[in-house]
Amino acid sequence: MRIIAIHDIVVPISSAIANAYIDFSTMTASVVAIHTDVVRDGKKVVGFGFNSNGRYAPQGLLRERFIPRLRDAKPETIRDARGFIDPAKAWSAMMKNEKPGGHGERSVAVGVLDMALWDAVAKAEGVPLWKLLADRYNGGQADDTAWVYAAGGYYYPDKDISALQDEMKRYLDLGYSTVKMKIGGVPLADDIKRIEAVLKVLGGKGENLCVDVNGRYDLDEAIACGDAIAPYNLKWYEEPLDPLDYLWHAALATRYRPPLATGENLFSMQDARNLIRHGGLRSDRDWLQFDPALSYGLVEYLRTLDMLRAHGWSPRRCVPHGGHQFALNIAVGLGLGGNESYPQVFAPFGGFADNTEVKDSRIAMPSIPGVGFEAKNALYAVMKPLLN
Image 1 (tube, rainbow, N blue to C red):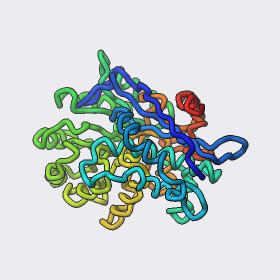
Image 2: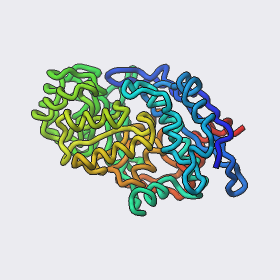
Image 3: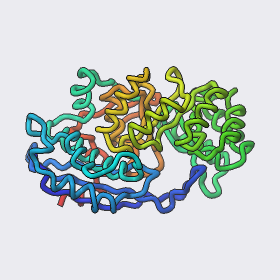
């Protein structure tokens, strides 16, 4: 198996929405296609990848460093014993001459290519990525279904509380029982009104509601909010603090007893390890949201899972950020706790294969070779021009 070409484009995913920290009016994503010399079922095997929302397209990094290194690597240096591309060896080729630390946005660029490599390898083997991962790394055991939750509740211009409730009702109608909303972008008293309004839609079930601050609060604000929402017994209180301030997280965890969630803005195994060592998180209740598409890809995510096990954490405590099919395959194949979903935002990158039914916030995976992008028509329409 040999790489014969790599193409990339930048696609806008702009939207008139905002969380507590940023708006998405100028957001972009990189999409790549890795062409191989393998032909299966009469078609050339091409792997696709893209970066998750919240980080801009890393096209400069891709074109200046990582695509050339991968494209120019000697084929025999990135193959496994059977002749297939080995994503771990390809990862090493891409990271040649990169110093440790200072991960920055390079983790996003490598993650885009890593996704495409795994898509290509699974297609070359003729199996869904979730099955390939289960067979290689999980004793052949894949989950029958994956738990998913509907992420939304953003701040829209002129969107009032009734519109927020209508949005959450739509998610329930789609089959979700657990939803997430943004907080931290308005005064706490106003957010409490928004939370209580959504809880009414959920029948008062706090365990079916997650709230996400996107790192907006300082410690005093996070404690004040935590004290205010603790009686609701929410599913989790997400990223209340700067993601790299582990001491603040540890301090909050001594006060806020219900579940916390964080990790989507940590982009390496080393950063994840620092969170586990110093962030005060509790392996019996808290949630880890590392996004493989943003954090050097699945090759690095496997290292992160090994680190977590060594520190007494189960993969079931991991629910990746991003709402994309790549993380969903990983969740099913490696036995994670579930995956985020974006039913109404960040189209066409979020969501699942078309016609995938959600029942009580769980879905079953189709048996489509690779990640399954071809079964999501709106997304595949973006990728298809890269076949030429």
